[in-house]
Image: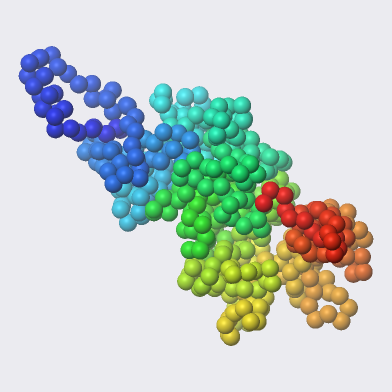
Length: 465
C-alpha cells in the first residue's frame, strides 16, 4: 500500500536549502511510503494528500471499529469490486459517482497466517467467519472478551456471534471489540455511534450493542451495511451487523457467507447448503432457516419489510403497507401481490397475499405479500414456509400456517413453530401473544413470561427493552 506525501511550503523550502547545503542529503522514498498517516474522515480535507503516483488518497474511518483512522490508496468501486478476485478490496469510502475516490483500497489478508499484512501497524480483520478472508486494518483484533482491554469496547464480536449462533462453525479470531449492554445498563455510546436497541424495534430482536452511524454517503465499515440505504428512508441511519438473512450490497457487508440474490429486488446474507440440517445451525432468535432449491439457506426475516410513512420511503416496487393491528404510526415497505392476488416464493420462501387494514390505508391500496410463517392466514400448504401446513378449522374459509400438536412440547420441537404454543381445542400451534395480551402460561407469550396483573394474567414485555 502506497502512502501519501504531506505537503507544506515552508517544509519544502527548508528541504531544498538543506540539500543545497548538504550534498549527501537523501530521502528513502520507499521507507517513507510504508508509513501510515492518520486522517480525519469528517473534515473537508481529511489530510491524506496523494500517493507516490500522485493519485488522491482517501481516509478509512477505522475508528468505527475501534482503531485509528488512516490514509489509503483510492479505488473505483465500478472497476475494483469489494468482493472480487483482486489482491485488494475496494471498501466504499465516498459517493459512488466519484469514481476513483469512491473507495479505499484495502489489502486482502489471511487471518490464519501470522502477520499476513506485513506491516507493524496493520492487522488482519476477518471479513468472513466461515473462511480465511480478511482485510488489513489498524485494529487490535480479538478472539475472546479477554482480548478486549478497552473498558468501553469490552466484548469481542466473534464471541458474541458464537452466542448468537451456538451451533454454527464460526471462527471467532481476528474480529473486533464492541461496546455491549448499552440499553440494559443505560450507558452512552462513543461519539459517532448509537445503541442499536434504542433505534431498532424489538420485533427485530436487535443485539444490545453500540453500532456506527452511516456516513454522509451511506457507507459503513466491513461486516456492516447502512440500514437507511438498503431498507427504507424512514429507517434509522445506522450501520447494522450483516447477520444471516439481512440485506446486503456485497459480500463484505456480511459477517459470514455470501451476499445472494433474493429475487425480490435485493440481496441477502446467506450460506450455501445441501440440506435443511446445514441451515438449522444458524437458527436462533433472528430467524429459522431451510435449504431452498438454489441450495442456499433462506428464511422469512429478509421479507418482513422496513418501517415507512409513505410509499416514497420505500425502494422501487415496494409499497408502504398497514396490514397488522399491532402497527401504529408506521407502515412496512412490502411487495404488492400480483394482479391474480398471488405471490412468488421469493428466495424460495413461500408467501401469502394479505389485504391491508381497512381504515388505515387509502381505498384501492394493494394487498401485500408476507412470508408464510407461523400463524399467517393461508389457502394452501404452498403458501407456508418450512415444515408448516395450511391447517383449517371446521367451516373456516382460510387456514393458518401451523403444525398439529397435542401440547406445547410438540410446537417447541418443530423448528418453524417453536416460538408458538398449542391451542388444545384445535390441536394446532399458534403464534405467540404480544405484550399485555391475556395469557394462561409462559409459552403463550412472545417474552415467555405470563404475569399476574390486577385484571388478569398478561404477557410481560420482552426482557432487555
